[in-house]
Length: 397
Ligand code: FAD
Image 1 (cartoon, rainbow, N blue to C red):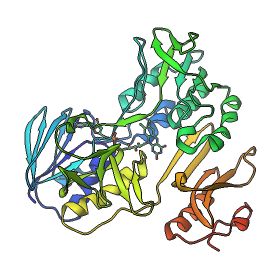
Image 2: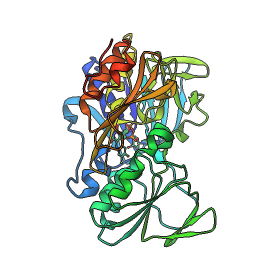
Image 3: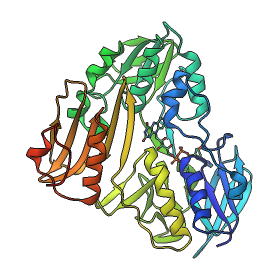
Image 4: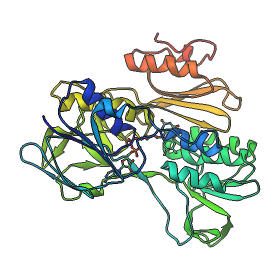
């Protein structure tokens, strides 16, 4: 394999470049990324960067050592896979032939209809732009009480903004962790001085206000839309690449083109829906840990090694002064069980099927998270009665 093209310069893209070199790939590597910035970490954007405690989250990488050509501010516009191997990526910098390809184009925030200005939070430029608007007394309206909405509300309230969060579902985080557990986070908003309005549908973003589906308006000096992201896949139209929510891959991140799994084309990070043998389904996990760790497996596939990605998914969120962590995959579970009082400050919720621990969400109980992750990774059974005692560690029976 001579030339590998990595499309997308986020965390997954840069980790793919590093992993390729670590795996001994000696050929050319070219990273094409639509952003003008070198790869940087996104989690601090809604936390330290928005708060003004950090301004640069560039991933530390020795580009010379990696011998990687970076085409920044350039965009892939089409993919022409060769048959049976290799192909061409059409980019704004010209056509690039490849022997190996990493698709790591991440995801883009969904926006709402309307002519009013809407802030989204995906890039460092978005974060700096929004940060400049967060001054005391500013009426900030956030659409969406998901992970991003909660984190932006946290920072904005701390900066003295008057914050209202408008959520279509009946509870925050319903889509991510279900309405039962999501509802337990609702009081955090009020305690932080943030008004949370649930069950409210937005029709459009207008200049100076949100127009609601019932005809009411919510006045705003600035509006942040945090209603989710969609994988960045438009450039793959017509390429024959199989899509299943994201770029559909097997457990080794092989992409299927025109019905054939290809070991020379892989997809990773927020744009990829990979087959999980652990859960027997495709997962599209739009979180940092996957972007960090999956590229090593994808690079192994490209260099011809046998590899499989089979983790217990993990992510965290920092909201309203709390560290919230999650591991596992709760949609497969039958029931929930609490460790500690969810009306208190530190608690965890476990999702179980029989004596199998499927997932855990912890609020300021990091030890529970570490222990539960270990149990889930090993796949060992737990005793639900013992698990319900927050004084005991989370461990197998
Ligand atoms: P991205 O980071 O989206 O990178 C993709 C890159 O590809 C982008 O630079 C994009 O411009 C480029 N690109 C797109 N299309 C093209 C094209 N056609 N041609 C060339 N380049 C292209 N996760 C957690 O687990 N915990 C957190 O607390 C957390 N906080 C977050 C806070 C914010 C504000 C955001 C935005 C994300 C957060 N995440 C968090 C999620 C995590 O950051 C993402 O899962 C991770 O960044 C995904 O990395 P990626 O490389 O797959 O995609």
